[in-house]
Amino acid sequence: MKAVYVALMAAGAVFAGQAHAQADVEALAKSKNCMSCHAVDKKLVGPAYKDVAAKYKGDKAAVATLAAKIKAGGSGVWGQVPMPPNNVTPEEATKLATWVLAQK
Image (cartoon, rainbow, N blue to C red; front, side, top):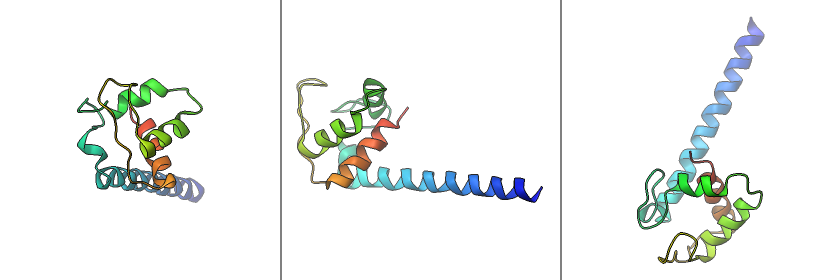
């Protein structure tokens, strides 16, 4: 019984850690003004993050592709409105891309 309790506590700690990490990346997205043009579940100026995740689902290069677009900007994939370059580090761009791709 004690082993089950310990396993449940460990699983809870992992889940809480993941939820905290997700909140940290969402805060990063807000601080970098990503949420000015994007939302998780609806199109604003740019596509909804859940739509981006769906488009790149199964693409093994998606994190690197999106991180590069976040850092350098881009145009033409989601319409005529360009996404400007963002003042993020490569690590921040990777965190943001990973978070975007996890949206459902």
